[in-house]
Image (cartoon, rainbow, N blue to C red; front, top):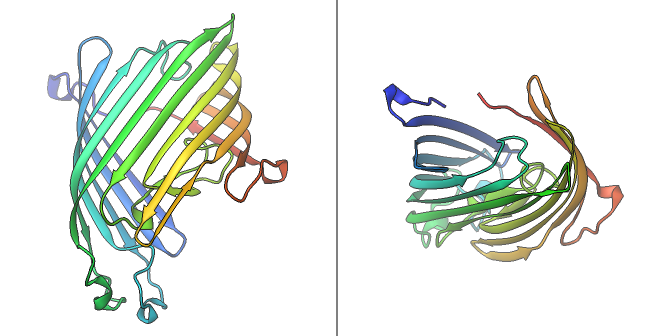
Length: 274
């Protein structure tokens, strides 16, 4: 992040994500954002993002008679992001409201893979318009002398007439749905609600109990499904010299999986700001 860009109120920031799914595909997501702080607690941002996903070599492609569930794509989008933040602390809030909304639109292009039969693409539109929408709202309430209750809802939607598995949002793990493996779920639309009680043991440390409830929709070429995963657990969070450390022990329930300690998950991570 570069605050006060060339002496203006503008903040310029960028990010780069790279994800590789075993030997199936690789996705990169560079993003550049310009933010302008508005009056009071508001912030408005303009961003551009490129999402490129490429299939990795597969010796079975030449024998396929249908398209695979993943495909070579590129999505270039432009969007707006608005947030309203009245939290009393960025990392250890005890009260306040955070609301953020995002919308982006752009062109999605599908590339023909040389290893696949060209006729498989005949009825597939190779250029389409794609829209992404996102919303997040969280409220913190004081509960007693050192207790805090967090309620949060967040969701996203990906709108396009032809979606493949590697186009979709990925959920699961410490930052989205606790109680499940990292990036375990695929969804083109989802909502996740959270209720969390935090008991502070110091100024920058607390223990907590939580419940996460998700509603996921997966609508891709040739298949549709819904899922309602639940995550329950406990953890602790505290400040270190490297950032804010969080440790979580959790269990999850989803289609085909019951709540069981035999399937429990441990999540941990450090959040830093530069």
